[in-house]
Length: 235
Image (cartoon, rainbow, N blue to C red):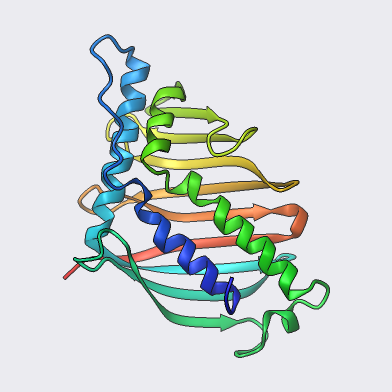
């Protein structure tokens, strides 16, 4: 991981957004149960929404907290050039260090070496995308293996061993639109438990997007909080 904390996180969030492009799940067979059809519909909608987001530019606010205190806040602009093949362009608009601009992370976190914190953050940024931005194979796996349940007007997809053995992910989607409402995952980074809690929203045209999520590693006292905002159609 190069440079300051925010650089690695920016790259993770931006480049992994397009993991599912073209990765819609196959249509369930005519003999599929209603639960299988609903799982397939949710997964197909996930792929379509992620692809649709490449037609927008938006901003991304990234915060890193250590021991409950925000140590870094970064604002990025995300866009998708027409010739990029779905790969985003990430432009940093602002960076604010809580203890003074230009001071290195090691000076702001006195009781833990800078390299150790960066290693922990890097591990989290490599782990989270598999749950937040599943690729084609993961979408297929989700459609085929998720346990489907219902709660009011919502469809609940629960899957285990999704990214790595022993993990668990739960997706809550609207039964009518099949758009995601939230996602929770419990997993491990090395020997440390990690939780991911995501919330989704819709643009005016119904496009579903990841609006807010938190990646938390309590054992290491690290929490990453990411918000996306100010979506505009690409010019």
